[in-house]
Length: 356
Image 1 (cartoon, rainbow, N blue to C red):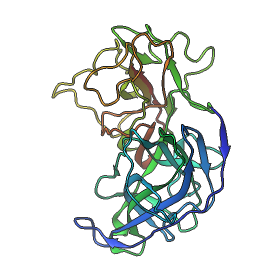
Image 2: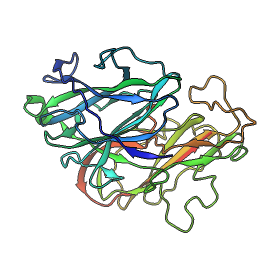
Image 3: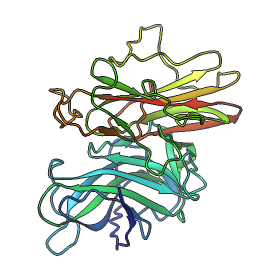
Image 4: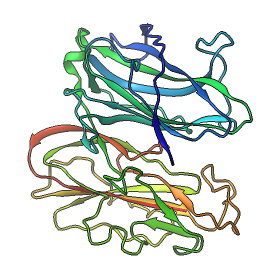
């Protein structure tokens, strides 16, 4: 898929609105990036790195709610919200060079992903007492793909509402900084996806890289991440293309190994087998293993992420990086997690994914 860089003017609607039920001093800031002109059939991966709207002072993001809006007739934001089967934000990834909230995993020229969403419009909300630290002078970039399934060119805005606690608010003194972790099943690749060919897998399901033949060749696994400190995983989310079922993020402590996947449903856990998100109790290392699951036998009735291809289609189903953790799960469709750091130690993480 071609990639190009575009330059657009962006409109920031940063209106401080008190947020009901939130900690004292929380503001809801409304931002709109655009307008973006999307041509018929548009599905390009694009990069916006000038004047991306963001908070203009130090503080903490505790919640983000993304969306896509039509531009008004005069070009300003914003009009109605298009249906996802007409025009949708296939993916949006926000990157920053901020040092206070510095992330781990993938890093691109000093910029790291810290928020992401897709056509499912997942709302990211951190647990009470935690926040992603933002600096007034941090520089943001948006990597996005907007699909236009119509025959007309259309102007749209990417909108995102942030619940923001300014550093000057008394509550900010009690917020623990949270740092993003970004993992791909094909990490360090310019286009980190894997293909699922019809007939592969078992029972109509396929898990990557478990069911792949030599997925990484002679090189090391690219779905693993080693952490050099302890901390607490606060939540994760995963991204799969149509046909994707779920993703797993396995946290593997010293002396343990990931559970095998047979391409079936996720394993059930008993009351005595509850996962822990605390990374500080491992004497040696912890591995995070990313594994997405997808369908290989055409559409599955009743599943919102089922493939639209017929069973006889020869085109491979493609899934993108995926991540899901036993700590917290959502429908966000990217390899993204967020953790609170603790004392320095030695930890490692590994990831894998399954798709249909």
